[in-house]
Image 1 (cartoon, rainbow, N blue to C red):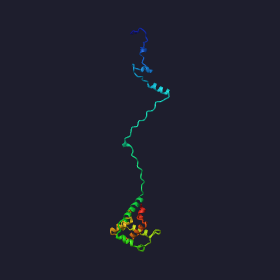
Image 2: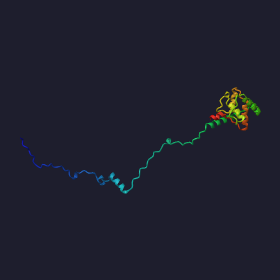
Image 3: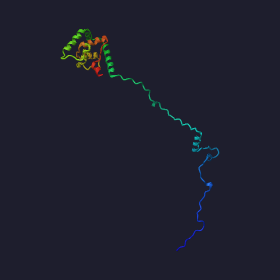
Image 4: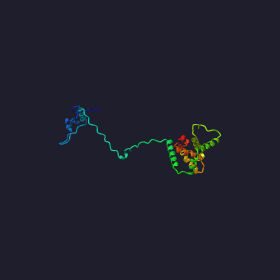
Length: 209
């Protein structure tokens, strides 16, 4: 059996000690952060926060810096919105302008013939139209004879459409096309224009506007 070798000396191992001069620690004062002569003192962030809390005053928040907006991006001045015009009013203005133009035209031979007709001649024409019907007209009890004649002319499609056109212009257009419109219709229009009570807009145009 081999013999056991014993170690001589102190069985406990000694620890290394670096000493106080080799101890590493963080600086606790601002004096340790000062460098050579002429260097500026630098306060630690913790110290600066403590000084602010004890003084009770906080540093003002930095002012927001707004960059100038280029003139091209500035919104243009908004013009006042124009009120929309109703379709019926636009149509009425167009028809009224057409009638004014037609009335200012030089007097034609048809105009002279129409002005020479009397109310008796116009009534005779309308009575002949009524007699040619199988049944009497309905819903026209409150209309004048002139308005009945004009509405009958409006619904006579052989003279062209009556929407968006003045009655006197429609009559003269039919005359130029050789459609022979009734001269009594022109007589009614001219007489009403002279009295200032002419309604140049077709009744069916008023219903559809």
